[in-house]
Length: 323
Picture (cartoon, helix red, strand yellow):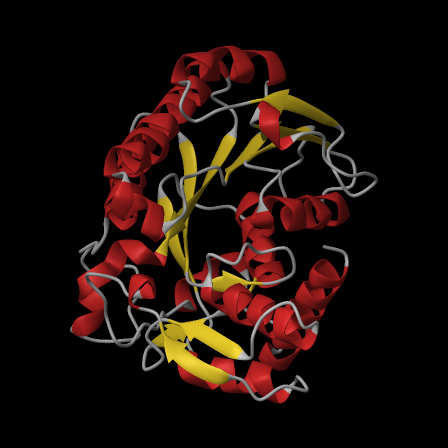
């Protein structure tokens, strides 16, 4: 396992970032954890938070070089992104500026100021897009056919980082499939369901669930398993530019997830389709082949899906109670 004196996480104040800091603290106890966050995100919690926080904004790429030159990370996990598909349809240019230009500026700063640093990119299975209509599960050789502006911007930065590996960037690209867990925002489907159920239980919402397309199949992971994959990518010896699917290999029907969450509650809500939750372009079934990650990184998911659902619903019950 490589030794790390300083580990930098961009987007550390976000949903995945807060879980990742816990994982990194455990797996690399001697490393200094540096959280790169937008100033408006505020300080991170301790003791499981960062040792220090530095300002970072994907929309200000000129500041990346100074930040990397000052922090001199040995390992960097780049989580920061404009990650909402719905937002990307409303403002495609914002996704391109943050996800492509911000990532390229950050990676170029690493090349010029911290060439020794391992750069782990949080890519996305969304970049496969319409290829899921042809076959599933997909491995890393599948064509990139993104079906929304968010996915297109992530595909572009995935390719850009792959090219930069040819110029000396010690890069690893992880294409994570859907993941959920405690702390996720309700713009994502499992969290949306759990929040609505918790609000109905608390009498804060009428007993009606607003949903998007239920007859879709998605490959879900617990966020803790995804964070374990990021840790494995730091620890493993991989060739520069290596790419790995991070997937369960088990597609789950969205409607069945809704039914499983309702069954955990004391409510029997009506279910209404909300057209605004539907995507202009979509695929019915998504599944990934993560065999390469198992072989090269020693990574496989371990958190049971029922435990994930229990955690998400419990988290939202607590958040609603304290709201």
